[in-house]
Amino acid sequence: MTKKEKVLIIKEYFDSEYADATCSLDYKDPFQLLVATQLAAQCTDARVNMVTPSLFAKFPTVKAFAEADMTEMEMAIKSTGFYHNKARNLIACAQKLLSDFGGVVPQTMEELLSLPGVGRKTANLLLGDIFGQPAIVVDTHAKRITNRLGLTKNEDPTKIEMDLRKIIPLEAGSDFCHKLVYHGRALCTARGPKCGLCGLQNVCDYYKKNK
View 1 (cartoon, one colour):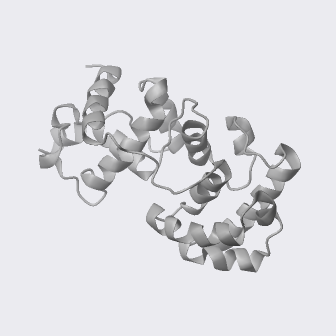
View 2 (view 1 turned 60 degrees about the horizontal axis):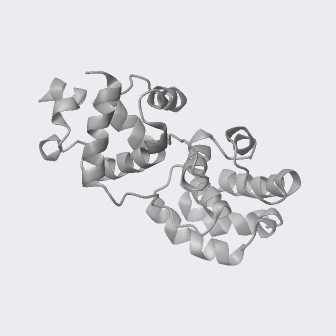
């Protein structure tokens, strides 16, 4: 069985089990998703969703973020962790959006990566969920599960992304990655996968090695 064939089996299972899978970060526009994704680094989406309502009430626009006092921004996002770096990046990101992109979130990988605090994971999430472009989001769930399934042997997120781009149908990439997150939370957990409850035993390298 090729990896492309394996992916189709996995996709069929995911489509059945996690039909309603979507991005678990709350947002109302591209900039809010850009901010929320940066805050989600080393932090749970649930925690970010607790922080962002008051954050966006306090700083409702790109301009408000760009002009924010550093200490106020830090206090507003403190519970998400690493708040010194995150606050600095959020303010600098907003400033660059205003100076280089007219205050509008850009729609290309290259332009998104030019923004402070934005890596490929954040850029791919925006490209896929906001702009409908082919995208592969490699978070901790995607990294863990794709290795266990045998879709990649790489540990570096960028290399994993490139591996997955070769085997996942382009139009399904973003949706597939959201469903990896749901599967990671439901069954294929970091501490111990619940293989006995999983319908992917016949295509999973991890299960075959450890059953």
